Image (cartoon, rainbow, N blue to C red; front, side, top):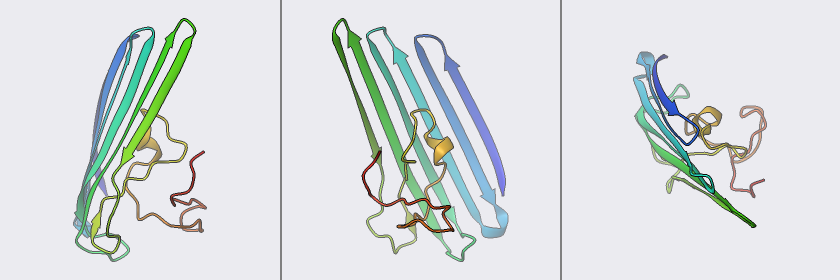
Length: 150
């Protein structure tokens, strides 16, 4: 597999923004995928906001014999905290695309690591996966089912 990466980041004490772009190509499988990640944060003192949007698009043939697969998955998270005198509050919200028809050749599921961190979505779960419904030796004991989050 051939990979090209481009990452840019700017950060100071009050704000930051970063991009990660990755293009993967495997000629033997006619497989290609583009992964993009945008991270941002701002800190005004009482209010701190941080967010990230990650997306994977591409397609081709997979090594397990699945052919003409298309990938289109997006995940996002936004975290905001406020602290003023005796008031302290926060909110964190996430969004991930899912697959309505798991039997077709279109992969749309973006899977969050259950222990994800904002700004590290792609480093903990860089590609949508053909997610296992139960832990087994193939997925190193991971269960990507829709159970309660920790």
